[in-house]
Image 1: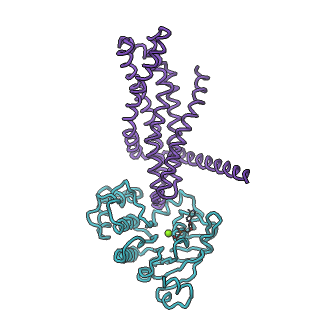
Image 2 (image 1 turned 90 degrees about the vertical axis):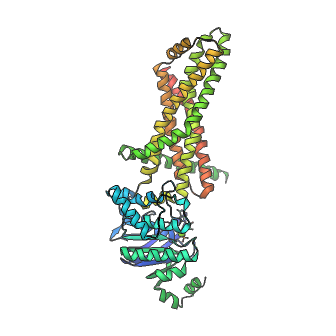
Image 3 (image 1 turned 30 degrees about the vertical axis):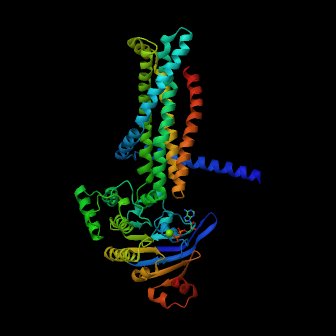
Length: 239
Length: 258
Ligand SMILES: Nc1ncnc2c1ncn2[C@@H]1O[C@H](COP(=O)(O)OP(=O)(O)O)[C@@H](O)[C@H]1O
Ligand SMILES: [Mg+2]
């Protein structure tokens, strides 16, 4: 459960978020749509406390994380998976080590248990025999899936995905979107996806929020978006 | 206008220095709280050492030899060529060892630290670390700085020993001093304070270099251009600060211990 209330954020005097209100229920997939530079990434980073709001609040399961110190936030983040736009995998670690990293850091599992869990997670994402490769040796689509594996390995409550389909061809985009959908349903986690990929967002989002000028300009199901008479929504969908 | 520009620059500089101090404070806090990942430290010691040692050995051999050659010429004018070994040993231990090693270290290991951290920053790997609930200071910065504190002094000792060996070869073959005489003179030349003052210097340089390079890497923004820029800055600032602080350290040490 994520509750965002009246969230504002400026950088160097430029208002990026200007009063965003959003609630994402447990098990729900919300897609945040918007053109480049509208603050989708900034919004996601607030949900995990990587950025501090100028005003407003972000509550995860009832805790207002904007009040927490960095130390306290580190603990909260164990339960949140973040898929970065370019994966942000450690380039000095193998795929296996990357995916195992959160387990090694935050659990007391034995080497054997870690290995089993990592392999099972990789397999469930259709990643076979890549464990010993370096991230730089993988294709873009595979890198994203490895990054997704790393994001969910701790059985996250909350999954945040920043432009999961960017830089991928239409087929791969569909694949990764389906994988996110499957995982999200399996874990029953609240999922927020930032995207400007309308096709896939409509396929997997329970609800969509269109961000414009730092505010939520429109909100609803894919069906409601398709039927919308709102000028701005129509324009955005035609692009 | 001119005034505002100058004031702005001064203001920015103060902000940067303030930020860098806070950064160093965080590192010290982590170390004091015992948040030290020895496994990472060990890897860094190996990487930083392996990267720099060959240049250190080559440079010191040459520096020691050149010192002895020049020392031989000038000392012979006073009829005191036996003191070449003194000159070589003291110069190495008090000045050349610490300063040269620090400069080599910042060009190699320091640049590597800044470039690595900078690249990780630009690729969001450092943000991702925070996102996974791990403190990037503890994971990336503390091990690199601690490793530098150990590796640089060690490299300086190697520099000094190899440099003396370079001087020894020149002493024997050019100055025709007996080998055993040269050695005993060298040992007699160095007092504990010489070694100790050299050590203070080199440790101070280790702190400066690793601090600057980690800080520059950590605040890198703006893609590959940013990485290039901040890495160059890191090395340039390290050079300047090593050279300048050496002057003051030397004055200080000479005042205190003579
Ligand atoms: N750390 C930051 N410092 C300054 N400006 C930022 C920062 N992060 C984002 N911005 C600015 O905020 C705006 C929104 O960025 P972002 O959230 O990345 O957009 P997008 O919707 O494409 O993900 C951009 O104008 C960007 O320049
Ligand atoms: Mg973005």
